[in-house]
Image 1: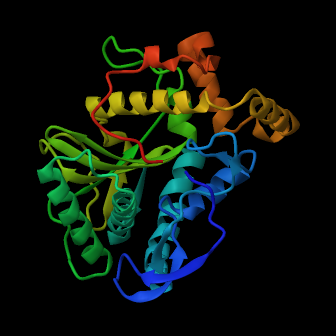
Image 2: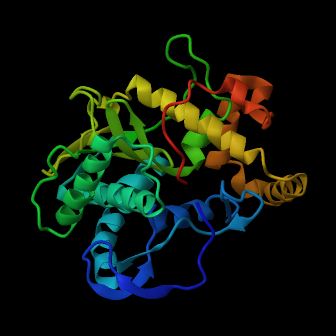
Length: 319
């Protein structure tokens, strides 16, 4: 996440419809998520780019015109009311949807990939993956605008996350994994030799846009279809590689949090103490309790997290 811009509009070409217009500050991670989080926490966030400064919103570059903002906004409203809030507040096991879910997911992946590309963030991709990323952007763009009826191989997946008590096999949990799962937003373009995925984390729900997928069974039960059907959260199988990736991102998050100054830690403690009555049942408290249960005192040892980090995948951070 980055600091809010002071200028709300500027002239330019809309990244979606390509028309010259007044561009709005468009949220990469949907705005409703930050509004929801602020009501259930201290009211502020901290950017991993500058953790010593409090902010009140997420990344919002000048990306879209007003018309395109409205197109995406209607799908965000449906996702917020039918998926995000029920999953986080009531732990629903599934939900009914129609084509709005796929359109929402495509809009999230398109925004994330567009933002990373705009900030020269695709240099880690292979030549083939770069070509595929550009093809995915154009396919998703046309689908959002109704100029394409399908998204071809650039499929979308929804991964509902739950807190983790034990790592698969003999692996070690990051002591910050559950706080990362339950309380953070994040975007990234992940790659390996034969895989390229656009990763958009909306607290405990992850939208994955496929640019290059190694095999059809990499994801199980998570693909979003454009038809009217029921999405069953309990049938989604998290790929083993995805768990290791979450563990890695959690350690990176902790490493960045370690840069918070002693003065700011004191300020954070004061805020939590003053609002403890309202925060006692917050996601942060629940996630911290789970990290302490799985990792003991390491959950509070913010420094020196690199020794817990899983093997680092070949990717880069964009938050």
